[in-house]
Image (cartoon, rainbow, N blue to C red; front, side, top):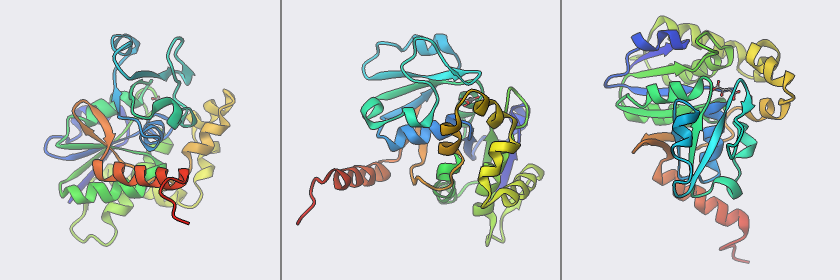
Length: 257
Ligand code: MLT
């Protein structure tokens, strides 16, 4: 298996996607929010390029408009881009139309691969297991920061690479994948340091969004992998059944004695 990481959007045009499994990562905060939305039972997350494209879908049955620009919620939209906003009460059974500064562009590019999914720190092990099961070469697209490198995305991509390549003698890593892997190993077990080291994390903290940093800089709190199908990223059906069973158990339904 060949594994490549495009460390910034400036590398997307040359990054191999055709015939590959492609994952988009935007730890702060778009893919973390999308994982949270799927965890909360949304029907799917549809990435769109801008506010106008999102507005065009307003009023469509079951649609919720979400997103941000520069970290701030978009006026008139139903939701911003904080993972905690995507609660069951707000999104269960609904289509989340999402537009964000960097993340949704990476998602749309990923969707051109043979198979595509979203990865965040919150679901990195589950996403790696899913990618491995696809049995294709893998490309990871880091959403970055206004076209440039973003530390937390590279760290997440690197932790994914570790899971794909360790114990896999056939794994062939590109230079971007090797660099990401090294960063992932450096921060493994110390993800909270990203809150201080990442420029975007510091900007979010400046906007009093420490709650979002706490929600996004956690590893493997979800087994949900949003996978692209029919225009949006949705929890795979088998996982969806598991989530429904879990929710029923938590709600007390079906609990015996
Ligand atoms: C983005 O797409 O740039 C981000 O998700 C920004 C954010 O919501 O913090």
